[in-house]
Picture 1 (spheres, one colour):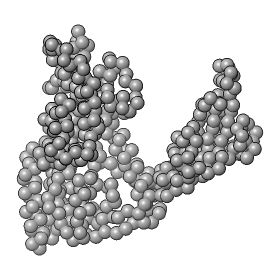
Picture 2 (cartoon, one colour; picture 1 turned 180 degrees about the horizontal axis):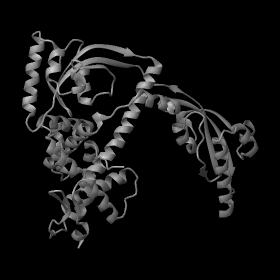
Picture 3 (cartoon, rainbow, N blue to C red; picture 1 turned 180 degrees about the vertical axis):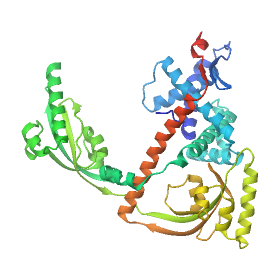
Picture 4 (tube, rainbow, N blue to C red; picture 1 turned 90 degrees about the horizontal axis):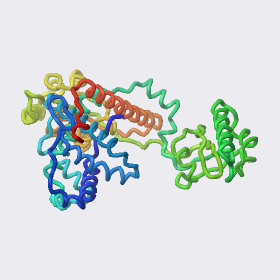
Length: 439
């Protein structure tokens, strides 16, 4: 799994915690060592101070999550690898001309401040009061936005999910799309006495494992519970009845939330022995009704030869022509860089929530049918969009299919991004000098 970048809001918390932890020892540092090179990444370098700063942010985040902090040498190598991947992505973004302008960056910082309960004017004060440079925090946020745009451009926009993939997903994982309110559980216990030795415990573990194997091969749960369970509901076939999802016994929480109807868990160890949980039935609601939007757009991509200002101006001129009577579809075919929709006059068809990137969806949601947006920017470039019509989609089966498609798209994007990052790393020249820096 590739290393994930911290979200800006989590980054703010981690930065503040990290600096507070480091503050006690900072005053005694009189002589600073040379800022040694810890890695060469193509024609760039990462130095020790960058690595130290990154570690200072990671440690408090791990602690806040309750995750054990690995030994120092292991943590150094993991964090350094994260920095290498970030540097490679920034180099690639520069080659492709991907940038983040000041207005976009200011908007992102405003959102970070709001999520932390602050106006933007107080974000600088909050950071600097804890010794964090606002300028450095601003540039780190810019890097995160650039890498997000790069991943959208290089990977995410290429993801496609077929109807056959949706069919296969629904055939096996339909229940995972239902928001569970209540579950009916069944239970088998293979008891282990408190004073049992290792041999007795291992015997019980093997018996529980064999029962799970038989259940998954198709044997009846109730019959096996009556014959083999040491639980107090054995004579009822192990049936525990219905539970509101918030009141499920603690050892059964994970199976109750994640197993599909009819599935059984692996043996779960507790002081009383080994438990097998079956999700017998589920109550809940499927995906809620959604509003679909029929829209069309014109995209101008930025590059080394097309600046943000030029793309925005070209779209403003096209918008004036459309409002003056020119045909949107004709102009889209002639000018749009979205080759997939340009052939259809920029028509995107019926768009569901989540089908487009947030910046596009936000602008589209604010338009009335027939209205054309002002030029706006997303990770793909600059757009104008026109809403043609809207409708509510509330057919249960169709909603499940839409939700399944979204889940599959996210899974594919995650896997594809991991593969793309590995390829980016493999194709780069990277020389590690961490051991030399420690000398």
